[in-house]
Every structure is written in C-alpha cells, then in structure tokens.
Image (cartoon, helix red, strand yellow):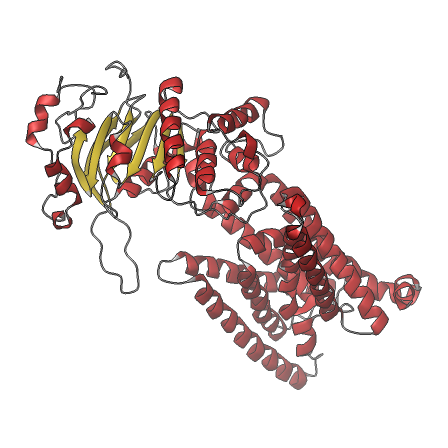
Length: 296
Length: 293
C-alpha cells in the first residue's frame, strides 16, 4: 500500500500530510455547503467563483507572489480570496439588478476571470524567465490541482475557514434555512433574506478558495455540488441529509486520495471520479427507495 | 361580529399610500404607480376583503403591509408600528399568493411551520417550549396533525395552503393576511378554508385581510370590502357592492381616469358616524358600516 508508505515514512509524510489534511477539511466544507448549493441551484455560481480564482492566481504570480514561503502562501491566498469574493459579490450584484439574469451574470464573470487569469499567468511566466526567477506553476496544476503543492499554511487556512463556515452556519441555521426555503416570503416573518444570500455566497467563496489548490479551479466546484446531490438522493430528512453530505464529502476526498496514491494519478480528478461513483450509487439507492412501498 | 370600541387603535392604517415599482434599467417602459393615494383602516377583529382585477395593486398593497416592499409614500401603521417592525415581532402573519418555496427541500411539515416562529430566537438555544407549543397549536388549528411528519413536497394544493396558514399562525399573530387564497384550491379545500377563516375570526378574534380577484371569496365571510384598482374605489360592507361599482373596478379603461380615491357618493348614507377613528380612510369620508350586515 503506497498510501500507508506516503503517510508514515518520515521523508514523505511532510509532503503528503498537508494535502491529505486539507482534503479532509475541504470534504467537510463541501459537505456542509453543498446541500444549500444544490437546493438553491447555486452550482453555477460556485463555478463562477472558483474560476474567478484563476484571475487571482494570475495576478498574484504577476506581482511575484509565489506561495513558496509561509508569507507568500498567505499573500497568494489573500489575492485569490479577494478575486473570488469580488466575483461572488459581482454576481450577486449583477443578478440582483432587474434585467440581468443570474446565469448571464455568471457567464460574464467566469469568462472575464478565465481570460484575465490566462493572460496574466503567461505574462508572469515571461517576466519570470527574463528575470531568472522561478516560473509560475504550470496551467495543469492550477486548473486541476495538486496534492503535493499544498503546504501546512494551506492546511491551517483551511482549518480556519472550516471554523468560520461551521460557526456561521450553526449560528444562522434558522434564518439561513428560512431564506433558502422561501426566499420571497421570509422577510414577512422578520428573516433578513438578502443578507442570508450574501453570507452564503461569501462562505462559498471562502470554501472554494481553500479547495482550489488541492482540487484545481475546474474541479473545485464538484466538491460543492456532489456531496449534497448524493445526500439528497438517499434521504429527505434535513438532519440526515446534512450528515450524509458531510460523510460523502469526506469519503470522496479520502477515497480519491487513496486512489491517486495507489495508481499514481493526480488527486483532484480521482476525488471527482470517486464522488461521481458515489453519486451513481446513491441514484440507484434513491430509485429503489422511491419504488419501495414503505416510503410511499 | 362586534367591532371594537372607537378608542381602539386600528389594526392596519394606511394614509395616502402610493407605491411605484422601480423601473427596469434596460429599455424598461416607465411604469405608473402600482397603487395610488390609498387610505384604508382595518379595525381589530375585522374581516376585510380586498377585491380587484389582476394587476390592480392588491398584492402590492399586501406586500407593503407585511414589510416585503418598502419605499411607499404616505404612512402605513400595523398596530401602531412600522410594517417591518410588526413582522419582526410576529404581530402579523402572511400567507403568500403562490407558494414559491423550494418544495423539494428535505423538510417536514412541522419544520416548515416552525420556521414561521423562528425569528428573534437565540441561535444558541432550542426553540422555547411556549413557542414550540404554539407551533403545534397552529398545526392543529388548520387540521394538519396527520401531516406533521410528511415531507413538504408531498402535499396536495389544499394541504400545502393549510400548512402555509399554520406557518403564518405559528407566532400567534394578531393579524392574518392572505393573498389570493382560493387560487388552485379544489371545492372541498375552499369549503374547509372558509370554515377555518370563520373559526380564526370568531374564536381567536384575529383581524383577517383577504385579497382576491374573485368576488365570491371576499363577499362571503367578510365584514367589509375594499375595491382596489390602483386606487381605492369602494370601502364598505359587501352588501353595497352594486354591479356598477364592480364594472367600474374591473374596467380596464379606468386607469388615468381616477387619479384620486373615488367613492360612490350614495355610500355616504351608510356611514353612521363620519368623524370616527380613522378620519383619512376613503379620502376623508368614513364609509364603515360598523359590522356584518
């Protein structure tokens, strides 16, 4: 078992553990947020937010922030987070205006940040080569993620993000759920709907940014859609849906990482494949459950 | 049904209220006001029906009263408070027109009704026992005990409506407002609805406002009827609704003809005491008949 070797041998443990730990944190984050993302049909917003991270990565490398040092990792994350938050707010603002549809708003923001990120990364690469500095990461690892690029500072930031998301979701569970269930009427019951939407978008941006380095810009959204989609297939009770979703997120990440170590493949795509296999299983289970007379 | 003494504060009071939706930025046609110069007063315990054509401003009026819309000119008071404050305090319960809620949510009927009682609770604690008891009482009131644990997506139209009424009753409000409650409900459901409203009014003394485009919904079981087509065209007991008034309210040619509140002149004789507690209702003339005819 290469997995055990990677995680126990003194030389390799420092390389793999941060990625594994961050992965498990991200699995929980995805599990917590994806139920609302699926139910509120925010999957495409998550896509917009994670792609905005690409523009942030490009800008960071152009500014010479590489993430190689502790301070660099923090600065890189701050820039990427800034981009993603701006994208989340931009989408919320654009789609809040009458006459602009949400999917149009996301399409615009997504394309803008991808174009920007690509141009900036190429420019950063050119300048780095001229100055003899280290080259920015290859496009592949930015787009699809990499376990070994994840350092302890990323794991720490992931832990803080999990604390923030977990605490806010617990404290705001009643108004958040009311807004999510009945956006149009909740304000008549004293629940501040627009504020809840904003909070959810900000939490989503934060969680996506923590995920991007591990799973990549293209695949990060899978973690914020699939666990919730899996859980909603197998249960229709809120408490068990939330528990199942977190379980699916963690299982998907753990299974994907084990597969990636054993088969010597990239982590991000393996995580997504495991999650999709779980989704297929849950769809079958859901079909059987719905056809059994007991639940009718 | 007795009307409260004159000194009692009105349940809902609107004074010269106008509201215009902000127009669309991209090539949107400038819209006129959705409601214009409406003055209206609802007594505690009264059942008021608001009748008018589709697009006549009924839902807008209701949304202003429950605090879903703001930015109206004029004054709106709900039990002496602003609509937003009244909503926050649970003084007013709202049953929306079409349920636009996400019905595939993994929520039980009990959980949805409990949402109606959730505002202002401490995030650190469970729902206090009295509030939880009121949630159960609301479910019993609408006769949905057997549906308590049913998933919210597995209800018929009539059942869902009763659950939405229970949600509106979950904080023990003083006023219940319902937007087009009869739309999409079968005959049996309508019968149940009518007897529920009567019970809520007579046993619990709730002030009830029902908005509808359908004359039958408001004419039976309402103490007074207000006819709204952008402005108020009639505000008195349903017995006085003549075909002429109805034709006027439902006529599409009416826009622009009556900028001001317009009241049929002959209704003045119905008014027992013109100087009563809401001098601004109906443009300075009070047409309250003071009870069920």
